[in-house]
Image (cartoon, rainbow over the protein chains, first blue to last red):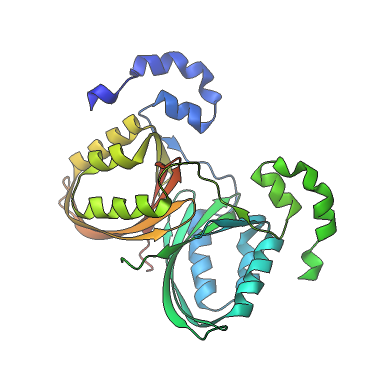
Length: 162
Length: 162
């Protein structure tokens, strides 16, 4: 392992003048000390995370949850590789999806609380209106927070191998 | 909802000349169209995700997994709000943690494959060497990928409420 340590602590110290640089720069210096994760002001992640799960399982509805905890600049990322930018686009996606699928049930398990956001596990019984195909879907949703609002959500799907 | 749509599609089109701007700018324009998620070149997320889980559950060891799939600039984020920047710092954290805890068992469930990375669920039987306290810990780990390497990992803990 020592072989991999190309930069000594001394070298890192010397360069600390440029410490104000981006995370990338800091990573290059490879300081051994941890740094506090910064996500701005506003409600702590744990509060948002627990309220999100409580509201979801109480069927408060997307609009109520969006209004309370989500940024207007929300970026929504789907596992298949596309992202919708801005609440208007995210709502359009949701409306399209709801028009094409019937959710017979959906349980939100969690939260799993992190430093930049939180994750939940969705277990949903979904039916495709077009072909009537019905399946139970397992998904992890990851929510990133800045200044007390969810600014990014990403849906990660369970694979058949599981 | 219409009330919330402050920018018409037409307005968005007019501004499309500046479309090369950062994600933030695009979010401001609130185009309804999704955009492809870009994570550089290299192995697809699904390949890295499945191999990570296979190697972990086969007990290949951290070093083998780091060498194969992780960036030297890895940023490791812990749920309590600290981040370690660079593989040297991440290894130091891991060594400290392993010196203070005994992992009697740890199962990695997943992967849950996303567009920017993947998530797994760890269920571990951990004993604190200092006080002999032993507990089963449930955690979601989220891995972000760029150019075929994991560049960020975040550990999100299960809360007592679950």
